[in-house]
Length: 267
Ligand SMILES: Nc1ccn([C@@H]2O[C@H](COP(=O)(O)O)[C@@H](O)[C@H]2O)c(=O)n1
Image 1 (tube, protein in one colour):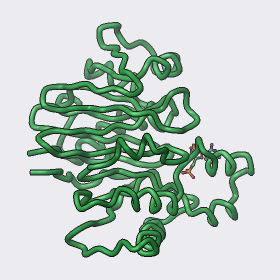
Image 2 (cartoon, rainbow, N blue to C red; image 1 turned 90 degrees about the vertical axis):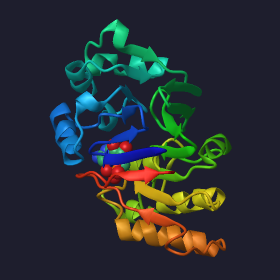
Image 3 (cartoon, protein in one colour; image 1 turned 60 degrees about the vertical axis):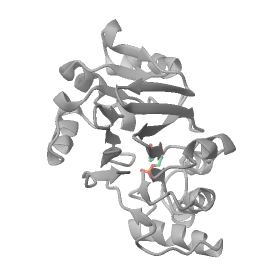
Image 4 (tube, rainbow, N blue to C red; image 1 turned 180 degrees about the vertical axis):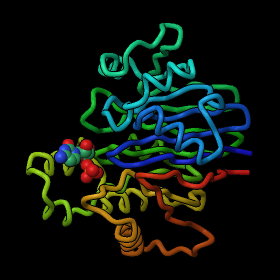
């Protein structure tokens, strides 16, 4: 096997993803209570005992809500960059020194046969990152909570087999919606969240023959619908000359309240 993964939950109410290679399993973000994360994992027939480590993208509560309790309960090592550690320590409570690991913002590390690459993203957290995972020739990339896809980010995402990509909002729905203007400006800004259109535009530069599936993620419950996100992404792709068959490439759903099915990436 290359990799397998499940997005346990995705959206501003809580985020968590499990990624496994043959010899390692990691959890990325713990954005629900520890109890809820256990329940979501149980739905995919895994538990905290199956994990080797936790990786953190950034300190916003929808990414670290249950981190401290979950890491302590399962005595798991936690990886985050230095600034993120500084920003989240008060919230997550005590993590023993031997379980605290500082990961470079743009770095690579290995756990058994799982290669984990972190890369800087543009979001209004102290030093947020995305992650790419590789094993046995398979590559999975996670890119959510980013205001825009920089050239540097784009280069990290190239050659992915599968991606989890933010498609947070429909711009018109957000503009007409009930959020206060300062929040709308934040979401639409360079350190906010990717719109459906922006996700489609990013995919125009990423859709090589290798990319087989993109999970649209971190959808707003206020300003988006999965069908609308898919329609918009597809329209952007088609307007840019990208037409594909269902067996060549697919846009897939994530959910704020339940896990995606296990997806196997690569052989
Ligand atoms: N009153 C609110 C509502 C949302 N946010 C933040 O906006 C972003 C998008 O949220 P969605 O639920 O619409 O995806 C996200 O970062 C929320 O935390 C806010 O700050 N205040």
